[in-house]
Image (cartoon, rainbow, N blue to C red):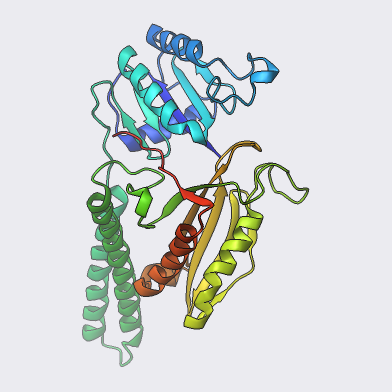
Length: 351
């Protein structure tokens, strides 16, 4: 798992959604959207003077992330720099890059929050095009429903049933669009209330006594994080024994009517599902590093409602908040009650 950033010279201001598209093109090797500027080379020179490129450091320094926090070679052209660092150094790298970008007058793009920040500290902002489109589509569906009903009433045939069927389908489409648009707005309002700032990968603050709304970071030496096993999807899929332990701790919820899936390996880590009736809750665990390490390792744990690819559940089913809080609470108690597991501060970006 790495933390990525990009900088370029802002020949003009663009919105964050436009910056996201530009960043993707840059990562695909298309630099036609950026302009060469001496400030970019000056930024790159000072950055690599502080933290050399990973392919230039001696072998004995390869695991010294204070010296070289990069997880791969920087992507550098006269018009941009894209950086990837190991996750434990994310806060340091973000603050350093943000300061240098401001110093040299460059735009900073954070793909984790999908936001661009300009040298004056202002942000590109985001559009609500998709949400607006849902409202408009829903209104059009209602208009068509009214047209079908009217046609059914004035038709000369004795069987206007087909018109009413189409009207009913249009109403269902409208309800689906309005529901999805409302939920999108709900998420935006909750995000603003809970953080009051740009969204980051870890949307909580008081980590000592945390509120697991989405994710929590922990540090522990209890579980294997040094020996890569043959069945790992990638060399950093540590956490299998951590997931087994966590599932056992959360398994106490079986007395409350929950059932549990098998533990599954994903490319990002390990995951299992807790089911309460028809509601699936995903418990995922990821190792926070790009290589085995000797020091106590960090993991990120998340608990969320996960209907998967079931479109009807996504559109119409309301998650049981009590059941979700039961799972989160059980995970929280398991982590807080073990003295060998320490809740650690998440990276803070753009404060």
